[in-house]
Image (tube, one colour):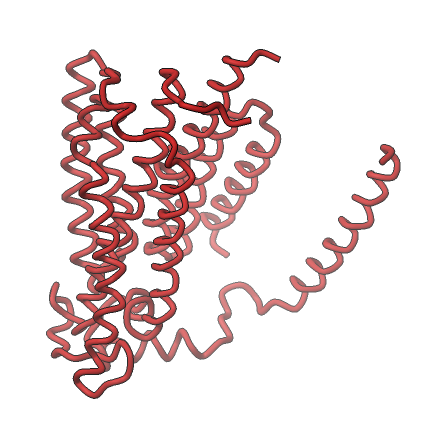
Length: 83
Length: 250
């Protein structure tokens, strides 16, 4: 294993830990996107550019859009019906 | 359930998963020593057999084209399910919402990014059999270009560009032509998804034979599918933010 690969694996592990430990939903969604980028780096380092391309768009744009949209929706409903 | 019971249950589960994980990892081949013959065979055969330089897309759209058709239809049903889930809010309900970004620099840069992303999408799809990329990646990039317009310009502009009148037929046509291309092979007396045109020259855009057409049809299906999903989510999101939802979900 070359050093670059170990570093990439380390970043993915750290990113995943950050996502799990985050409590605020919006912050968690943003961290998930950053974690996705660390996965992209991992795929590039391990010579899988095809997978990296799909991961880049899905974790960079598609997933956060859907996630943040859902969070905003729930927040809007909560605002209307205060518990 | 008491706290100690839950912790006990967790420890038992974690011990089981941990044991299986360690057991599995111990038996893995050493790092970088790939043992399966399939990858080696495919990477040697794609060029002489199919005239495709990128072995990954050769598997996805040619050797395993039937599997990809299944994945394509999964995305199709996912997009249909999202559209059905959000059917309560109509496009007409959110049409008059003004949600503009009032900064010329952001607008300009966003439009530039959208155009560049759109070009990149065509590039990624067209060179799928030459360089990394292909129909799925290019399709998602295509749909993402429209999201730039929403983020940096206006919801109206996004609605006009990525209207469901355009996205839904695009998705259906892509998914339908994927299956249709597989069936056209029957007319030539071939198996499902067999190649029916010449393979072309390796390294050119038109290499790979009819798999290149499959590549393009999957690009249309993926682009349309993701555009439908984005539009539905954004529409529902705008309705929720501006209090246009007809019924509050209990």
